[in-house]
Amino acid sequence: MKKERYLYKQQKFNTMEEQRSLKYRMRKYKSLFPILIIAILYYFVFLYIPIIWGFLISLKNMKVGSTIMGAPWVGLDNYRYIFSEGEMLKLIRNTLTISIARLIFTFFPPIILTIAMFDLRSTRFKKINQTLVYIPHFFSWVIIYGIVMAFFSGDGFINAVITTVTGKSVDFMTSPKAFVPLIVGSQIWKEAGWGTILYFAALTGVNPELYEAAKIDGAGPIQRIKAVTLPAMLPVITFSLIMAIGNILNNDFEQILLFYNVAVYDVGDIIDTWVYRVGLGKMQYGIGSAVSMLKASISLVLILISNSVAKKISGRGLF
Image 1 (cartoon, rainbow, N blue to C red):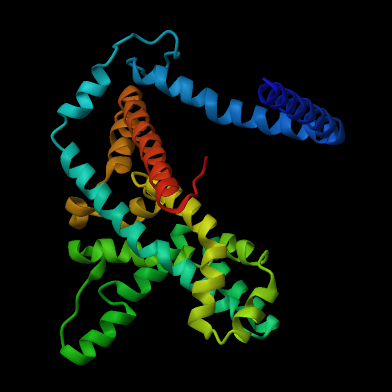
Image 2: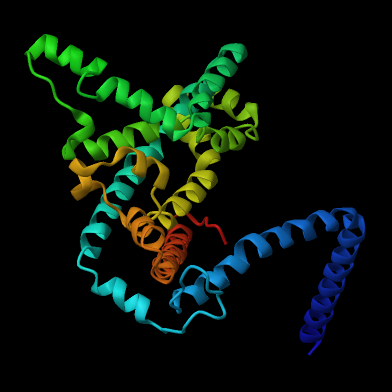
């Protein structure tokens, strides 16, 4: 009985301390509440309300000139149309092919680039390199496409070299085999540097004494990376991987739209381009919204699964 009474008092005391601490924090940070309210309103107005309207549109036969509430109700007909569409299997295959290739080949370059630049001894040289690798991120895909075209088109620089060596030319821009490598390669060149920002932020919190201690223990560069750098980056790596898996069905629509053409339709036509043609081109907004809702649902499931797996394997997750 005494032990139970003691545990009850201890639990009550801890609860009171938590309440006091919460009240104290609310008083201390009350000046930040208006900013929090603005952020909540932003997400509610620009993200959650469109999700609700999008779901309603996916259940209606929405046409130009009609309102969302006034459009005829069709229930699940839009979803049935999607699954009965003959091209859908090809679209899913192309989407997954490009997405998985992106996930495999674009996930690791920012990590490797961060580790390589973080170990540079000259601070000035490190900042110059960071600036140089960030710059491509700010180029639009139109500019990136122009650069790729200048190198890989039928009369581009790469073909000039190939023609000089072999006497033959290959138009990579119209080659189905070269389409995915061009998409992934241009994505790496454009975004690898920008992707290092999160990893650099994680490494700035590492105590330099850990590296000194590792050096004293005789650890070489590779051992220091394994013992100090990678563990410090692990939470960010886990976060990035979970988000990448969750977005596996979301390819960069602008990039695909610029790069694909009639010659590469069989490998370049994805769900997003189909929605663009059907949803906007043919003004079938209900079908386009239904596809978006399906993609969002699948992405949510993938995030939950990947988060659960990450927590079991590494003990870390988003939530």
